[in-house]
Image 1 (tube, helix red, strand yellow):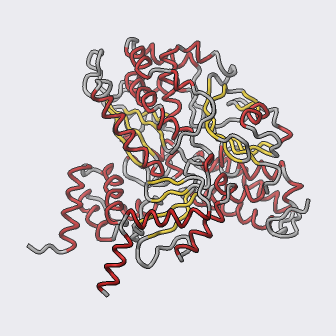
Image 2 (image 1 turned 90 degrees about the horizontal axis):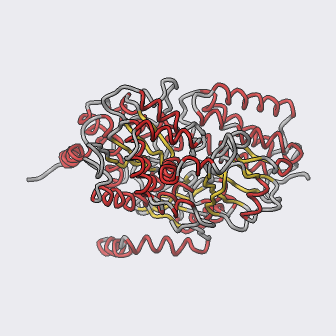
Length: 399
Length: 173
């Protein structure tokens, strides 16, 4: 609950109302053009261009459209959305309102993970205050008849509901099982109506971009990964917490900032991300190189990489929705493989088969959870073979 | 007038219908509220909800069984969820787990005989920079040490007047 960030965040310097007012003084098309020009891509991890998403939803014809804020932050090692909701909720709520204005929606839904239920009173207060100030509700101050309100809905402990179509299934009262895509939520979303689902941080940046301009945002980051990004840093480092860096920062530079020099590997993007070994610390954290929703977990020299793979596979075995076979069965088989490796009983031939299975899961799983679940296993196997092969006893390396 | 348990439950669930609506989208908020009040969702409650929303009770059961915060079997007054994901793991969650088991006399997945505590694992609680972390009902505890476990459990017992409850039961016996 206590705030834990290192260094100032841009969010602290931006007035939510400035962003909202600027947006409401523009036409809908101009708002979307501003977001598109900024190069903002989804901050939840998938990195889909926000402007494109909004444009598709704006172009869809429907009586009712929805704006959903995805606050189902469940990726292992991610906690920046919790900090944003706690300290900068107005930026997020204003971002949802801007989204509603841009695509022509009157209703927003904030889907908060059940594990963050303690944030709910704080957010309900923020919503009530905004209604009182005429920033939400029927007839938003200073507009000709634009109305927009936000309802909160709670998750119930399912990581997969962070996937946008599973989240929508959950909102509709079903099991959180991802849908086939296409159709995408921008045309067939909540109650089959056009719906934009955006991450907490994405919506907060939307408000900042409207307040400070697309050019300002583009001044940070790389050509393909514009702007600033929040990182949740944990693991073996001197100063864990939430950091703000421009995209394109190298792993080495990040480790220096957080006091994590000497790490043997860094998990970037959480359990569904990639494990980057020390030899590749020159790589950039950006959509075009190592992509992340912001989770950075640092592993010091003493860590057992196989135990890490095991922990991630426990996570996926538990959190797979069970709908498609590659994910449901694949993660169980990979975990059994890790157990064999721990016992020193895995042949190279079988390890190759497991890697082939992992590649099949990446290709054949229905949603992002299954497709990315073997990533950590595969990167640990390919980078740390000398550590994981031929073990003499469970949990101890022969090195 | 004397109300039987099923009648009372029906009335209570119908009043939830007034609050959350009676379409399918109301299902999860309704179940979350029943879970909060009864610490679980009984087969009878599932049947009443199904009747109210005009869906098959198996649909309700399938939703209850999917989400880890909804349970068919009632939980304890305090549900303790210890984060087992990697960052908390590296910060020593295993020792906190052992101490919780020792102090409660149960293992993970169990509820104490007096119905006061349920012990469970959780996946990433989003407290990775302040682990090991655990959640008790809706309250989060960070940087938990094995030594701190006893105090946290006592805090729960006192907050709910469980000591008084226990004394009362002993007195009645």
